[in-house]
Length: 125
Image (tube, rainbow, N blue to C red):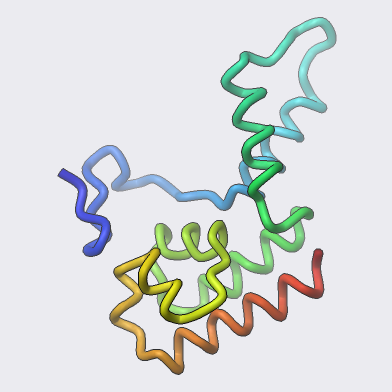
């Protein structure tokens, strides 16, 4: 069984790279633009694209790349990077509640990460 507090998600996810919703939207949008004329995407692809566009907080490939880079420099696991980049928690308490593995960070450090994210988001939206 998966233990999210210890970031043990099971063998299926050992080599997986978690994505931000914005990255999924960018990838699927790119795929849609390159699809052969006359071919239709599956319903699952269409719904995944709609969902990721709706909930992705970053609207450009560059902004998604920069947020991933920012979070990647903070000694975060890939699941934590994706969770923070998808959820954009506003407070330390919210971040630690939604992502229990962040308990290992002191409040000041986590607040710094959240502040950097918030400042970055406001510049790129």
